[in-house]
Amino acid sequence: MHEMSYIARMVSLAVEVANDNNAKKVKSIEVSIGKTSGVMPYYMHKYYPDASRGTILEGAELICNEVPVTALCEECDRKYEPSRENNYLCPHCGGRKAHIIAGKDVVLTNVVIED
Ligand SMILES: [Zn+2]
Image (cartoon, rainbow, N blue to C red; front, side, top):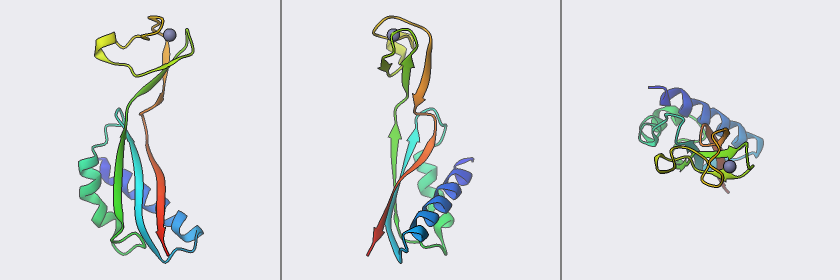
């Protein structure tokens, strides 16, 4: 399960943020998970208690937000969500050339510090 390495990375990043802010306690951390990252929020939650044990994050809530895939059409420069219904083509111009601009990665988006 690669979620273990993702959650370990998120925890160490969040610990760094907490330390930079001289936090004594962290209330929650928020992670956005791209739909195509292959990462399941279920496993993130499952491994989180172990990954955070003994760190400043122990007991802090983990919030996972799934992020849909967003593509940017190279033909018309508009954003869309590729889907089976539109054959993964741009719904604005029917273009095939696009690159994925969101929904691929697992990103730490927020660290809420308790004061
Ligand atoms: Zn287009």
